[in-house]
Length: 235
Image (tube, rainbow, N blue to C red; front, side, top):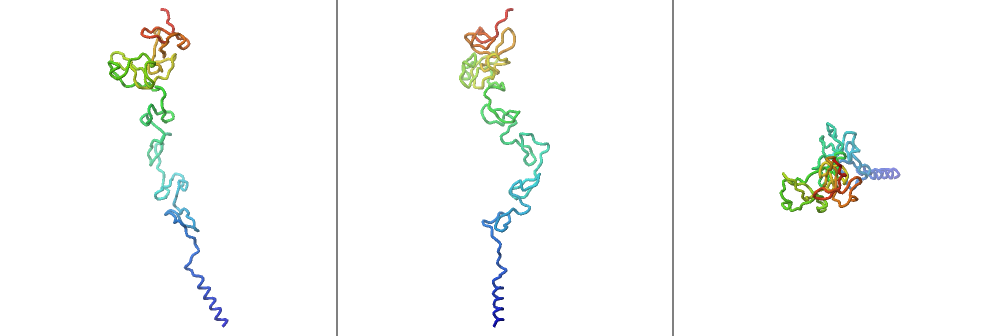
């Protein structure tokens, strides 16, 4: 009888230890194709990647195959404002190479920083492009002596052909103040670049009295208007 009990107990223990059952934990949700389920947690499968940090130097993670692939090298090396993309140098986002890369009004490409910046005055001395006008009324404008005669956002510019004709046109005004040297109307915030005594040209402005002018200049009769100029020298 005792022997039968031992046999029965042994059979029970064998039946309770079913090799078909596993104690391994299941991952939920299921792991991605590039991952392996390990003890209930999804871990990166050996040889796969999820970010560039999983790859060696000179390689990057291809997020479609999740394999590390060699990074194409640009030869010659790209400029500081460019990015190497698949072996070709392309313009880095937010950078520029020409003014055409800039979309804002009055913006230019600063070739020092290779970033677009908006001009507040006519640094580039760019004319309006309007020429050979015979009368200001032909371009729905009016005549002027200086920028004082024009609306905000306009400047007084010679748009004539064979004969000079100053009209108000849209555009940035010059950057230089009265008393600073100039070579053309585009230099001056007044559009008046005048000389006297056959000497150097200076930015000027319309005036009424000497105190309207910078130090060393006087309010002089320039035939058609009074403007700041250097004192007249005796011949």
